[in-house]
Length: 77
Image 1 (cartoon, one colour):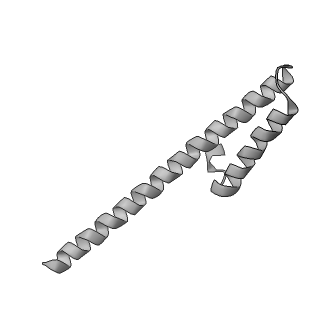
Image 2 (spheres, helix red, strand yellow):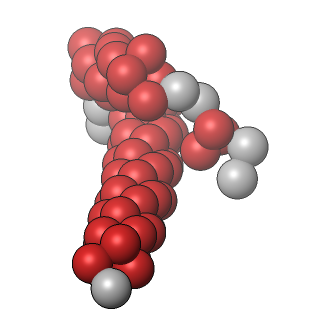
Image 3 (tube, one colour):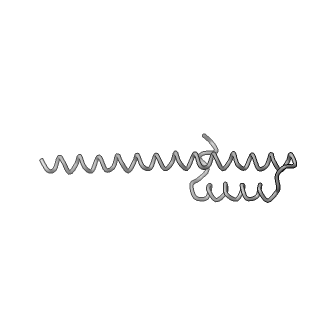
């Protein structure tokens, strides 16, 4: 009986780990999308005369840092 419970516990732990991984992926995807939107807004503001090149560079730097840390899968989704 304890073997069954041990296997069930292991399976539950694997399921929780997979669920946490998926949540982390979704959060990284959302964060990347938000950074991409901020870059677009900064670029638009710069081109329309209400923003600055520095703000665009900062937004681009934040996006590149995110891509280096989490990949660029959010760009395709």
